[in-house]
Length: 442
Ligand code: GDP
Image (cartoon, rainbow, N blue to C red; front, side, top):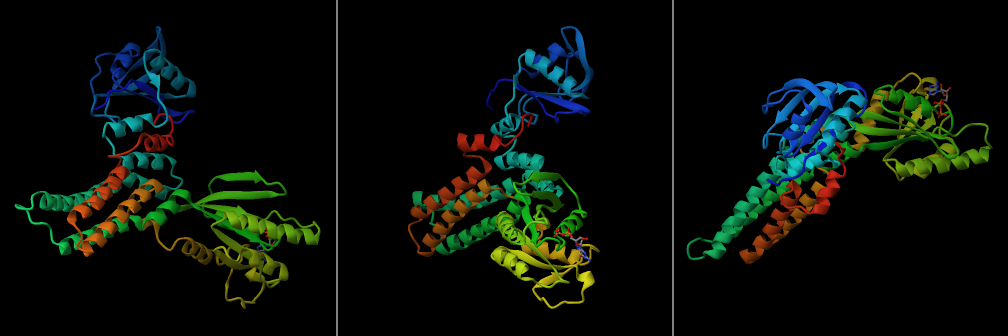
């Protein structure tokens, strides 16, 4: 276990709330709390109730949770002070802790210590950041699974399979008199199994990325075809954050939905009537193009009662290379159903919206995030891809019955990539990069 100095930070969100939590971690934790707490003789694992006192002045009535190393989140001596959740109360208590010998923690420093003290592997540390920052309830659940070590355990198990084969190869090559080299047939079948297991984790990469980053959907079309109406109808399902971003020529409205995955709707309905017709067309098409460029999916609307006009066709043409859905709106005022490429809806009466939502979901991801067994991030996917490449080389070599000494090199490199994934082997640069994404107090 490594020794560090003693750090502290406010672990709860800044603001007014029921409880504010200040965390202290490091060798001086108990010494510091003994200086500022009205009770002494703290016992690890036993909650204590008393006052935080600074220079004879009572700062707050608190509950103190003492943890002795290694039985704490960071693996060090840890004190948690639960005080009343007012911003200034929390700050006063923090100041008292700082004055008595602790240093302000950096971003993610508590979790980094937990990792360095082997309380967590890197996948679990990353899961903490995911959990805190998750934009949807679903992603939070998946992150919590990783926090419990699902990804780390699977990686370790794949690693063990590789290690077992490698051991057999090394035994055979180092002690040829005593141990027979494994059969190539055996190697080939083992390698195939291992690659399958890596592939399985990687098969959820796409859904992981979508869950993590979300999807941008743009609603586009001529003025008055019902874009805003559709936008609002979709938002009524589950409204989230509202932002109004002023564009240069008009307002672009974006809102975030949680449909198991974060979806950002961009309403391009800023094209107002009253502008010169030529201009409207020009701006409209330019606008559609712009929003389409940034969007993962475009919902193109036209007025079913007017049929597809030349203007509609121009706009549609400008987005046709993007994933899109053609929507014939205002189906309530016309019986026309002649466009087989379009879905007929009424944004006003909310008719056909369920079918549209299903179409959107199918278009953007033809999987259910529920079934995402392993959530990974780009860094982890990169490690898995590289481990797989090494295993593919080993597989090819085994099929060609190459020297097993050479095959062992590929296996060792696969092991290294898996170790990088769980953080067994990691550079400072990668580590700092990961913990930079944390907040202070984590
Ligand atoms: P936008 O300019 O494309 O955003 O269109 P709006 O959503 O502002 O709608 C323009 C007009 O069409 C409004 O008067 C809406 O009430 C009307 N409208 C929108 N959707 C429908 C629909 O499904 N049926 C009917 N009958 N009218 C609609």
